[in-house]
Image (cartoon, rainbow, N blue to C red):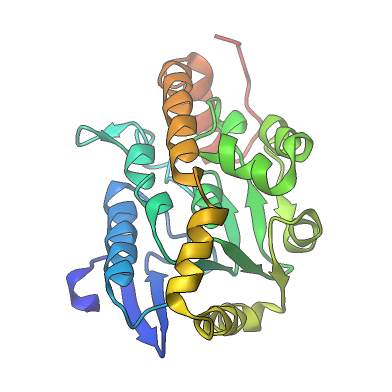
Length: 257
């Protein structure tokens, strides 16, 4: 099964499916990676043996978002399709999923980490919506998913400052559901998925459909709004400076234009 994917490994253990992002060390994403994950999730949805799945990553970061230092256009209309529009496919998955967050989940990588139903993290995990530090508007449906998890005020704090939240604070805020030592992150995510898989699969899918009713539609509406704002903020001088300052690891010298 994994032979059909270039950047991910796909496997299963009992009734649990596993998608492993294989672009270490930072697992930067683009349209191709998002589509592969969505394809794998859809395949799991069709597989009656799979009852829950785990999204995990090789390397240091869970997903450090787009590789803006080397590819500033990531997330704009690559090959005619917006990255974040492609990502809305992920929100339409039908079975419970768990993100095993072993390291930084930054920018769109945070969006990817917040898409599953649950997150298992460790103190070393880092969560940041750093878009304004790069000079543009948040994306990946984060304006919907982040406040839903941690409340409007904390989401505003993360969006406006771009600050990084450690695993312990993320757990206290409800962004992570389980906090374990780094070495146990994947094992604990598998354990939670296996526990979900012990419940009757049709009943779980039915309950999840009720609990997440409107979730994918709301994520899609948020994405449309985000793209409108991203399109113009990406054309500013500040965005160019944001990418440059990010690559040079220094604060941005903003002009407000």
